[in-house]
Length: 159
Image 1: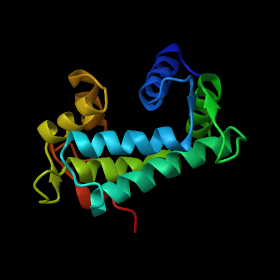
Image 2: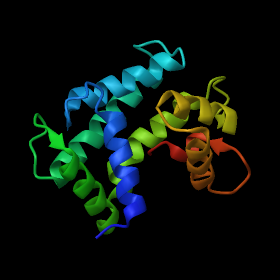
Image 3: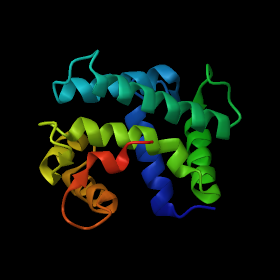
């Protein structure tokens, strides 16, 4: 069982990912989401950052689909999505589900390529993603592992 606040967050994510508004999530929705984010920050479509984000989003969909017992070519409804996210959290698999897309989003937010993401850069990407400034700041603070007010891109890159 998940809290009402967590359910609300997962339902909000569902709405953001449902790029075509049909009430279902498919691999295409996640690919479109990656494209919207890269376009919003002016990242070229074929760049390494854009490709990493597309791969991370594809991973997120595939992992959630597997947790929901849905084919990777299938679709998730709102309840399946919420249940899959809840299952990922309860089983300790959340990092496996969202880790690659989080790492790619952090790298995308590194506008100047110096390996460090500021709160302003992070907020810009998350505002483009449909989150409020307050939500972006809360996410930044949660990811700021050492509390120094900066995200180190290499700390999020998978070995």
